[in-house]
Image (cartoon, rainbow over all chains, first blue to last red; front, side, top):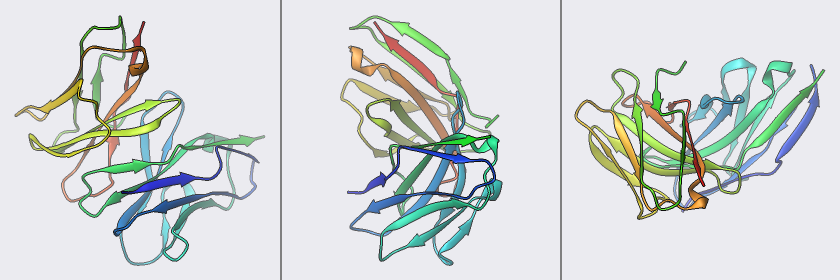
Length: 113
Length: 113
């Protein structure tokens, strides 16, 4: 089975500061990794994904994530956050079939002016 | 707007009742996923359909069932409702071959009283 742990439930950060949202996963098989964002009263939106190749993946809105197989981590980073980045962020994994997804419990990012 | 529509937006019903939630995927997307989001359980994968066929089942209760019709819309049926079934139910659609590229609908908020 697969599981996802998001280590921080809430992350406050000042505007224009860097941020890292942490995600660890466990799986006995190879998986794909994703980060999604959920703005208030909306559905989730894909930020970025790691399927294979370069371990550093870039997504939308200036976010990037690094896949670390030895540490089973997929942390999300942004060098300078904006007020508009305030949202809930979810890390997710899927088996290579893409038929089933497992989500973490989410990290609430609050950007402080 | 993701292009995925869900109806109704809100649903209030009593314990023991049965409801049907409807999802229309983006034009051309063959995959539909259903998720349940609640405060205590987070985002839980329920079931995945591809072109009318069930592909994977997650934490879906026996009281719940789903299907995908020939026009690709999907319905999630919830019966013998309990207070604990109160949650936000999302569907997401995905284009073929684009793993993880899920487009989420706005959700149906179900309240069981």
